[in-house]
Length: 524
Image (cartoon, rainbow, N blue to C red; front, side, top):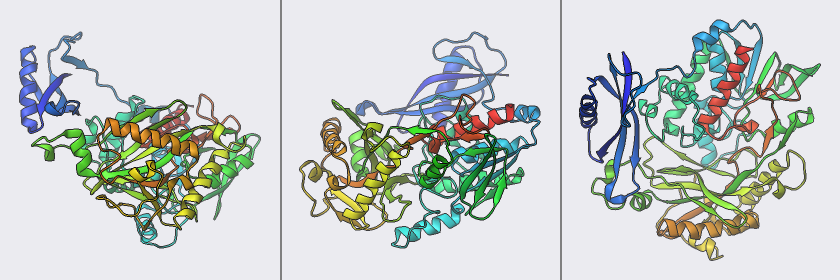
C-alpha cells in the first residue's frame, strides 16, 4: 500500500470531519485513486480575508496502485519515513558509559528518553521538584507566599515551558518534529497536534505530558532525581568525570547540560571552571494584554460562526531605524504570570491552558538587546543586565506586578485606574511608570512599536490594554560554545544543550536539540 495526500481542501468555518473526507474522496477519485481510509494530515486556518475565513486541509489515504512519479499539484505520493529509528540506534549502540542529564526541561527529557530507549545508563537530575509539588509551591508563591529559589516557574519538572502556552511550532523545519509530536501524544497530548499548523498543548495538559515522559524514562531503566542541584563539576585531563550535587558526587562519562536559560548560578560555576562561553543577544520588554473578545474581533471580524473558531492570535513586528520591536510568545486566552526565580527580582511570562478561554489574551512586546548594551565584556554581562532590570521592576512596584495602561505609557503618565481590562497577573499589581524599570532604548522603541501596531490592528493601544513588566527571559543571554559534535570545546564529554546553552528557542527546538545530542552520543 502507498500513502498519498491531497492538498488544498478548503472548508467553511462550520463543517464536520465527514465533510472534509467527502470532499477529499471526490478529488482522489477524480485522479483515479480509490481511497482506503482517510486521515487529516495537516490543518490550518486562513483568516487573511475576514469575508472569507476558512480552513485548509491536507488529507492522507492509502491505495494499492499509484504512479511513483505522481504529483499533479493537488495530489502527491507521501514517503513514509521514520524521523528517528530508535531500534536502529539501539542496535548500533555498544556503549557501557554513564550519562548524566542536568535539567528536566524538553531538551533534557528528550535526550534522556532517547538514551534510555537505546539501553544507555542515564540519570536525570533536576534542582526543582516534580510537577505536582511544583504546582503547589508556585500556587503558594502567587498567593503571596515566599519564593522557592529551586522550585518555581523556571525550575522543576518540565522546565520553564511547563508553565507557558505549550507551543510546539518552530521555524526550523526539522523532520524530528514528528518524533517530538508523536511522543507527546503518547504521553497524553491531544492527537490534533500531529496535524495542526500551529500545534500547542497548554500548561494544563503539558503537566501530565512531562510527568508521563519522565515515567517512560524510569520504566526504561533511567533514574530521575528531583530536588537535586548540581553545584560543581569535576574535570580530569580535560574530560568530565563527575558532578557534585548538594547531596552527593555522581560519576559520569558524559554530561548533558540542559540547564535552562535561568540557571544563573550554574552559569557562574561553569565560568569559574573555565568552560568557554560568549555573550549572546536576546530581547526584553513587557507583556501586553487585551480582552480575548477584542483580539478575536480584530482578527476575525463579525463572522456569525466566530464561536467555532480557535481563540485568535497575532504576530506583529516593527523595524525602527536602530532597533526592532515585535510580539513574542503570544498567549491567546491566557494569563500573565510572575515567573521570578530570584528573591527581590520580578520577571513575567505568559501562560495558557489548552482551550485558551481565559478572559484576556496576552503577548510579550520585546525589543532587541545586543551585547553592546551590556556593561563589560564578561560572558555573564547579559545575566547582570537582566538582573538589573528585574530588580528595578521589583523595587518600583514594591514586589507587586508593575503595570501601566498602554495609552498612558505612550503619553508618559502613570495610570490611575483600569479601563475595561482587568489584569490577569498572578498576584497583586501596582501602577508605575514602566520607564523606571527598563532602559531608554527599550522604552523608546516600544513606544514607536505600539503606535505602529495600533495602525496595523485598530485600537491596539486603546481598549484598556495593559502593559506588565518586565519580560527578560526570552532566551539565554549567553551561549556555551560547542563543536560540530555538540561537545564543549573546553571539556570532553560535556554537551551543552537546549535553550540554556543558547542553541534553542522554545519547547520544540529545545527537544530536537536534546535528541540530536543523544543521537550523537549513541553513534560514537
